[in-house]
Image (cartoon, rainbow, N blue to C red; front, side, top):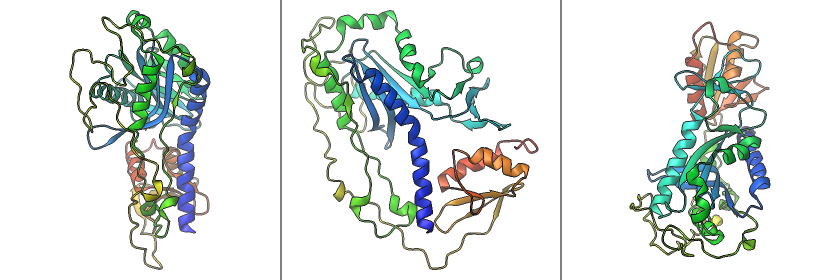
Length: 372
């Protein structure tokens, strides 16, 4: 029963987190799905060259303007703002204190920079002149432009297309003369998709499952490449400054050497073979920990701040609780929403150990007497 509740809570969190990405993907596909100029890639995960990975929610590759938009989706339901120190927060309805969040614009810019490094390493720098990060929020989210400003690349998903079109410089316009062909755009997109790395979720360890067959472990499929109407575009090559771009995957660099990332760059004119990701039944899955002893109990209550306590449950999750109807309970609710799952039976908030650190930090950063 405990395992089932833990799995249901985790699935609920995953579904809520994916809501914004699905809505954004739906709108982008409706706008660009039949475009002959823009390729769309959803949910791409690449090595970052630092023994880690970078997740791209959505990529838009414009072959004519030679631009790439890296979209970072944030499914906020309140009002997003920041202060004079560039510290970001979200004001949710019926809460007297904001919830602090990491700088979403800086996060999108970091992802854009990592994609630039990938382009350099694979000798595609000449293909795209600009790679910029954009933060995409739902239509119901309010953006405090008095604090954030009108020039910051954070927009509602239904306004993105107009903003992207408006943000065109003179150098972008010259891309009409030196842009990529449809075939070259598809080649770059396919090379990106071929290097997608599936996330390795240790579901057994997380839920204490010891007898799940390997084939039951879900995997993320390789992202698909759009646009849809690429076959309608003639395959004639467009002239660059002094030479014609070939039909090969790679594009000559703009006078600089590629920056190596997690793997060496392929030779010019060649295409790397996609990784074999079809045999999911034979994936190595991290072994489950030893079963817990029968009759294991939750830990004793530990005070986090005045009026709010926590305990470790037998399955490893953290439970936060406060006396109902008190200011501390209101404060805990404000911090835990979006980070933890409410358990009405025991009237506490449940989350993973990683989320618990974030909740403790949020509780500790607000002055005593002002917690709501």
